[in-house]
Amino acid sequence: MRFGNDDSDRGNIEDVRGSGGGRIGGIHLGIGGFIVVGILSLVFRTNLFSLLGGGGQAVQPQASGQQVSERKQQESRQEQVAVSSFNDTQHFWARTIPNQWRDAHMVIYWDAVESECGNAESAMGPFYCPGDQKVYIDLGFYQELARRFGAPGEFAQAYVIAHEVGHHVQDVLGITRRLGSKIDSATSVKLELQADCLAGVWGHDAAARKLLDPGEADQGLRAAASVGDDHIQKMAGRRVNTDSFTHGSSEQRAHWFGVGMKSGRMEECDTFAAQ
Image (cartoon, rainbow, N blue to C red; front, side, top):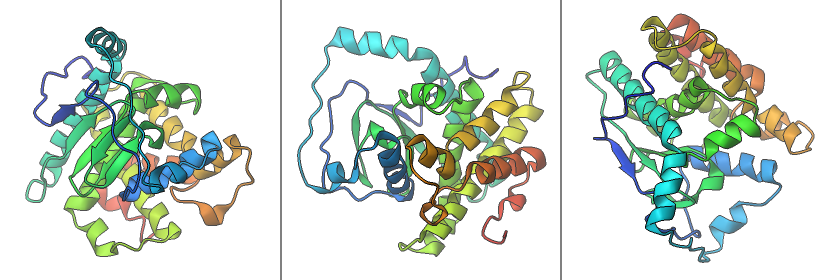
């Protein structure tokens, strides 16, 4: 991606890597976090909820200054793409809905982190917390996205960020608040598909500004499809159960991301009215 070399704007970035581990236990997850825990539990064949609900203590060892520096250097390119994608996505939405927009923050962490939605570990994957209006990401997820989910490439990485910012868009527009705290699986799917579509709307604008290299748009479509509920259930060796979907199928996720990419209009992202 063309903007991936400029990550100089750090006003909305919180880098807490190397600052020590967080407690895991008794957490209250935001919408995205709860969904990701369920999906990752299937992928890793481990009940991650058991780590979150017991009130136990899981403290990550403190890394040395040299270890922190070396690990950050290994992630330098992923960090550039994540920060640049986050900034560019926010600038786009600030232009699109100027009277309603307020910036989110992005927290880059390792292993575990504290948020207003509770404590979380990196196995949960990236998530957005409406309580503090922050996107949280362990950059190691990008390796999983490429290796385990088969979705490499910088635009695939940018899609992940744009999807989480899409949840912030839902927050500032009051969509999440109007749904209330009790959200069933069908409503959860519509929320996630709308975030995919909103990510595509930003992708359309990025493509129009010549920020994508040839073929990169397909990376976003592959990334959206790779994290479909049916694909993840198959990866976990499970039978596909549509009643348990929380994000939508691979076909649905790629479809709605494509709707945003093709139209460039957030008005086309009304997944709640769609069949």
